[in-house]
Image 1: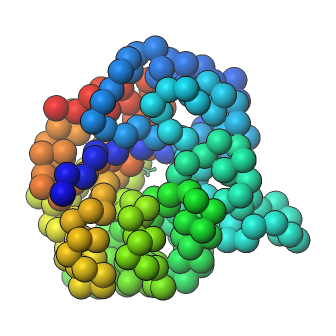
Image 2: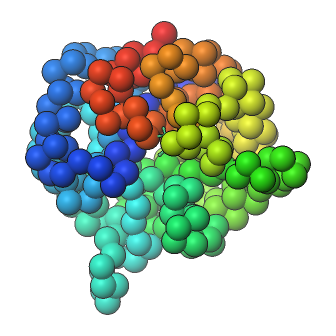
Length: 251
Ligand code: PEP
C-alpha cells in the first residue's frame, strides 16, 4: 500500500494571530498546487480560526497542538476535540515531548486524548521519542515500545486508520542535531514492527510514521528517501515560508 507523505509544521508558541495569517498567506502563494502529499500546519490555539478562514479552500490542512480528552464541561482553560473541529481543525498533535516533559503528560493520559480525538472525527498525530540519556543507556527500543503500546491501548484496527505517528528523538528537537537517516530509519522500522505485533500487517503497512527533529531544507531529501519515513513534523523550519515550502517539495 502506498502511504501518502505528510509534512506537518508545528508552530509551537510562536506567531500572533496577525503573523499566523501572514505566514498562511505566504504559504498559499508560494506552494501553488501540490499533489501527492498532505500538508498540515499547527498554529497556536488563538490563531486557529483565523488561519482556517485563509486555508479552507486550499489543500493545506489545520492541526491543533494539543487537546483535553473531554467534550464539554467543567474543564477550565482546556479545549476539547469538539472545539478544535469547530475552529476548523482536521488534525491534533498529541503527546509532543515538550508536553510530556514540561507538563508531565503520561502515556495513559495521551491515550485518552487520542481516543477523544478519533471519536470526534479528527486525526491524531501521536509523538513519541527517546531522550539522549535513554538512547545512550540502550533503552531506546524499550521506551518507544512503551510509548506505542500504552499510547495506542484500546484502539481498534479501524481507528488506527486515522492515526499518524511522529518519531521525534528528543535530543534532536530544536537542537540542530538531526538523527542520521539510518538512525531514523532504524527507529521507524522498529515502530512499524511494533504495529504489526500489536495490530496486524495491514495496520503496520498503512500507518504513516513521520520523522521530527531539526528537519531542514538540506536534510529532508535524504530523510524522505528512507523506506519507513513517510513525512516530517517540522518545528523551527516551519516558521519560515521559504524553508517550509522547500521541505514540502522534497525530492
Ligand atoms: C517539533 O517541534 O516537533 C520539532 C521537531 O521541532 P524542530 O524541527 O525545531 O526540531
